[in-house]
Amino acid sequence: MLAVEDVEYIKKGVALAISLSKMWNSKLYLIHVVEEKKVPKEFEEWEETSGDLRTNYFDSVGERDPFVKEVETEVKNAGVNDVEVIYAHGNPADEILLAIKENNIDCVIMGGHEHSNFRTSFAGSVPEKVCTHASSTTCIIVR
Image (cartoon, rainbow, N blue to C red; front, side, top):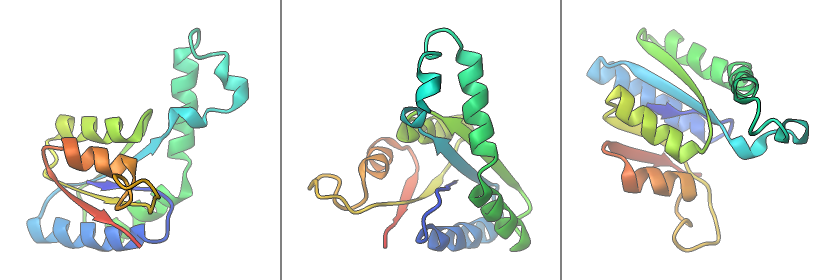
C-alpha cells in the first residue's frame, strides 16, 4: 500500500511501490486520507447532526484530488494492473492502520516529515504511529 500525499518526495515512494508490486505480482492499494480537522468552519456545526453530509464532503474532496489521480495513472502506465484507490477521512494513522487490517496489507510505503520533537523527528507522528502499530512492514520515505 502507498499512502498518497501531495509532497515532492513521495515520488520516490511511488517508484518503490511500482517496483515491489511488479516484483511480487501483487495488488497495489493507494490510500489518501483527508483529515477531519481540516473541515471548513461552515461545516463545523454539522458535526453532530449531519454525518452523511460530512462523509460526502470528505469523499468528494479526496476523490477530486488531482495528485491521487496522477499517481494512479502513473502506476497503471508503469504496468501495475491491479490497483485500488482507498479514499478515507479521519485520523490519517488510524485510517491507514484500518486499511492495513481490512485488506491484509503486507507492506506500507509512506512519506515522513522532519519535526523538532525527538520522538517524531525521524518521520512525523503519522508514520511513527503506523510503524509502531502496523502488522506489516513499513517503509518511510524522507527527504
